[in-house]
Image (cartoon, rainbow, N blue to C red; front, side):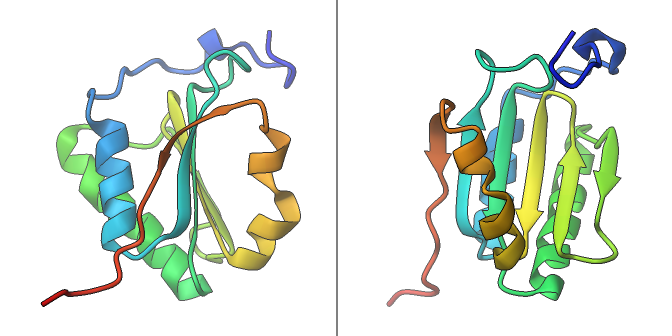
Length: 135
């Protein structure tokens, strides 16, 4: 049992392709995610293995990033078990079982402070922000 009272084994298990997290971070970078990080939760909880946390600059930006993630991962057979918050665009949660993507409006990310809550987690990836075309 996890601290949330739900056994992880009760959730459907679909191993993501090895490059699924890479696809997520690339898709977030493509859509100009702000302060995107991947947290390794494997030693901290049985609920999921990784959190991917990113911010958008507006509700439309948050929705756009979440939509882009869904359409980028689907052709690779990676589909979410559960999606929350997409119509509002304030905090979109995409639960892929082995990893959960949180795309926040900046105010909500600051309020909930998931990185602080999971402060013992190892930061695996900090997704670089692209500054635009060079040359």
